[in-house]
Image (cartoon, rainbow, N blue to C red):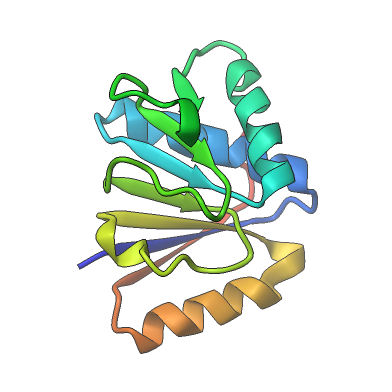
Length: 141
């Protein structure tokens, strides 16, 4: 069954949320997992750029879903694009994809200042009987 992790960031801006997403993707890819980052259109384009720069001392091969091959450990896509693997999904989109149950793990990254949508997602996952894990992060950078 899919494991769902909620990461609650004390930070208050979307840029911090995206940086944490890059860090989480790097960690999972380093552990040998393939990662798909799902975001709304503008955020997906920003993440594609940010993955080239953050963290500054590391390089994480990645591609947009439309351009991906089997070589990239990380793919970035918008809400309509489906990745070619089912290891890890980092969901930054406002909704939960219908196909989330195919992944081994799903990560939801939530800003503490905007918990409302995160609570709705948490409730939906809980109602589905999925194992939920909660991580409060104050100083992660």
